[in-house]
Image (spheres, rainbow, N blue to C red):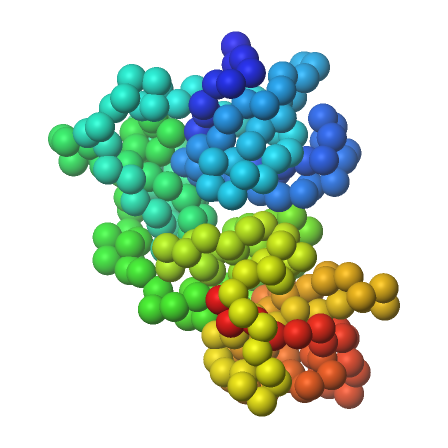
Length: 256
């Protein structure tokens, strides 16, 4: 039984983090396989409120999808962590099941050259080079998710929101970004429109002036973002244009 203060690791490919202890509540973010968290509160039935170690984001999750972090508890130093780079990759579990792990998942290699995720032994069913080939930059990483569907709170190829895409793209390049677009809008330095270049982050606002969307410049005239799907659209000084319609109003551009 998990208790407050326990360190845990996600033992399934991905898991929703919700605003309240209910499957019907809003999905605010998503944990990926092998990511670590700390239990902040134990709720009724199987609900626990967790805080992800990577970005400090909190939400409610189903404890059945998590495993006590035995390696941390035993100070295990022989495990070498690796973060998966391919959008998705197949792994064979000891029970014969083949599971797909999304990019951003953390797997470990022990001194006996055995792979595991959250303490569960498994074998890769694909090229090792493909599994760990690091992207050249966040733009290259984000581009690998073109066509992935939009999903509020998502952070993986099976569905992601705009800020989840940006956070994951930077994470795959070893850089940390906060989870939400309004938080990411405080990173780096603001630049003028005429100074923009590929790889800059553009932020967009609603009628009240609140930051509600983010994307990464593919070129000076095109932006890659998650809206319906991860897609490319035209970028103008006033905002994002899809066809003959402006879909998002420009706030500013920042270089992180």
